[in-house]
Image 1: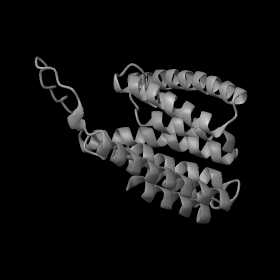
Image 2 (image 1 turned 90 degrees about the vertical axis):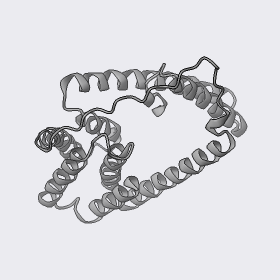
Image 3 (image 1 turned 90 degrees about the horizontal axis):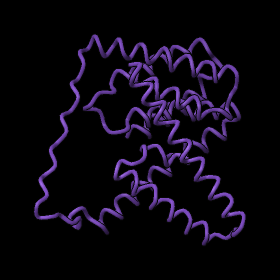
Length: 228
């Protein structure tokens, strides 16, 4: 899977390449170019996001210690496994066949997939994205901005859309998502401060998960809104 493969690469970079910038920077350039070049409509869903997270988050955390890099890699892998398990479990408990269909409902038309650009265009776009992402990674790593790793990840995500309009849309969506997630965090924090119990935490998590998932399923909120 993309995340597992990228976590392994991230650990290798953290262990063997971080102390050798002349090797690390070209390696990142090749990795980013590979990721962005293969980011096509036929690519596995969210493969670009998972691979970007794996090769950036783990090494930048390794700047604070090798043990932290291993911990982050194991935590991300564990979270992925738990997420896949619960997705399988709830699709088993509540299958899509239970969805109500109105008699007059028309079958939804399949969206037309965007055309795959030519190899030359893909290479050009991948090169532009690589330059932007590589600049961000080099800057954050050189200044040891571990605390701002989330900002670095957002830059790498937006670099995957070198078109100016697409990047603006991504920035607007991310800004709205951060605002919604930030408001939710403030509310949850104050509620947990008033009632600091584990059962209340579980109930809050369930309520907010239902609230966010229902709105995202109806496309009322941007998908990254849950990132808070």
